[in-house]
Length: 138
Image 1 (tube, rainbow, N blue to C red):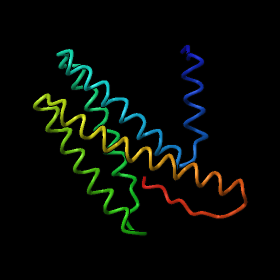
Image 2: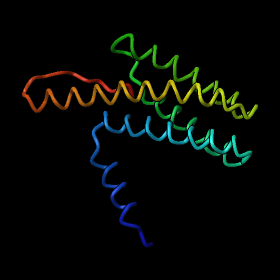
Image 3: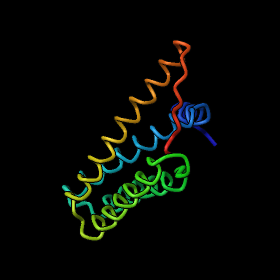
C-alpha cells in the first residue's frame, strides 16, 4: 500500500497528539464537514451534503461517547449541547436545511475557538512552570 507523505504526517500527528489536541482536531473536522455540507446544499448536491452531515454527526457522536461527565458541571452541559447539535443535524439532513447546518457550525466554531484558547493557555502555563489543569471534554 502506497501511503502519501501527507497521510503519514496526519497519522503521526494523530498518534502524538495530546487528548486536548485530539478534541481540537475533532472540532476542526466537524466545522470543515459542515462547511462542505453547506456548500453542497447551495449547489444542490444532495449526496455530498448528506455525506458531509453524516461525517459531522459521527464526530459529535465521538465527542459524546468520550465526554467525562463526572467531574464538574461542564460535562453534562456539553452533553446536552452535543445532543442538541446532533438532533439539529439530523433535521437538517432530512430537510436539506442549510440554515440548521449553519447554526450548528456556528456553535461548533465557538466551542472550537474556546477550546483552542484553553489548550494554548495550558501549554503556556506548562512552559512557564505553573500548573493549570485542563480536563478535556472528550
